[in-house]
Length: 317
Length: 317
Image 1 (cartoon, rainbow over the protein chains, first blue to last red):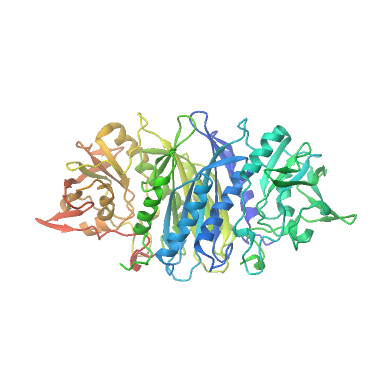
Image 2: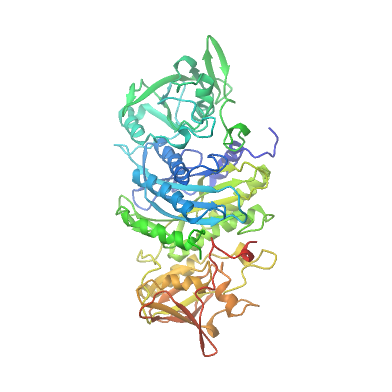
């Protein structure tokens, strides 16, 4: 990759370096699904922001309610990834000036109603317009959350060690249909499932995230310790109908939980299947590798996932 | 105005109607400079979000550090308006795919360093790209803050009554130069000035906001009580060089404090001039009117300000 091309992961590494001079109130720094702040008393606040770009993450002619809903659901999935519960959202939108008031109100309804359905009211934001008609709309949502497990524990992306199991909720792959629609527009954020797993597995649930870029890429993000990689078993990947293992680990936008645990997880949680798909292993001299065993062969799949910023053109809807 | 054209104020009224089913933890609902949440213990958290649209709020060729800085400063001005202090920011950016990594890193530096200078570290966010080169970038910033006055009091937009004085900090007008640059890109958010005023005037500081759309439009937003309007005195408006009273009340993006107080404010605060520019008055049968006395004549100026969403084309930079 060329030095100067926009890359989300390069920029995240850059963000990470900058994070070292953060004040002590930042209990979980940038780089996880959410950051966490300690406030004046004992309260801890989790916060994250994510966006939906029209023509990129949703079709330009998608219904405004659906766009608003997806923008909130993406953020709710980040809350689930920490085993937290949402308390409020804020939203900003920059709209093409040829959108009308009804379109903007329907977008607002999608944001507002999706938030309220998860006890996360829309409490602020801003509306602006682009200078020229036909410019793609952008919707940015910030979500606030608080710890929700019985012991107040938050589950970060860090902590997986060689020998830990890798597991997922639900089924993977095929979130984006050929017409640009599909499950990526409407999915159940695994909030209660995450809290249930954290309460059940306690300290044996060592790390967790949600699958946005595909398990192939996201699993590497749980292998944060030096000399630790991931080995998956293709036969065990739970797939949606019509998906082979490559689609299941590479399509992205599954918004399922991907987690590392130190003992066998339950077979289901809140009625959703839970499947062990592999194991963290010792990989001396390298970190974050993701291999998959297919018919006795071991394939490196770290490049299979979908990077949101430098993504291939065929992922543009 | 046509029924369906995009209007920020119409949409805000719509947002306001929706706000009635908010849970009790929302202590200040949408519609003020920031919303406020009560958390589990005694902590209160303030939060707001605002955005900078390239080609709209800044020139397309503006330096990325400057764009990042303006995006944070706008939010810091909202914190000042509540007499609060910032604790953290989050940012999302949707960039044209022809921006390069260095541009994105410089944008990040502008966000990060401006936040840190006000003890508000950048703790999260997202980077995405538009589908097509040349599409205007959008930067959205969310800011978190907490109460900062000696008695923990927050100053909202509500509370002004007939007889209260209207005052501003600093000087007004001329924030946007002919080349699209000027003070709107870099200004001191009046955080310490606001806290100083609130500590000094206590409950006699009855309402406050920051001037983003011009005093002509913003003063009406402090006249929230039924049958209350504002009367300004053109001779008393503190103007920047080269500005007549119309520019001073209509240009917008002053990011000074505009407040209602029940006794004479100090002549300056933290070295910044404070000027009484008018008074709230009883206006039976109507609310939110803004009149200005010029050479013995009374002029209605409620339409003079700048509405961010439905703004006139000449405000596009």
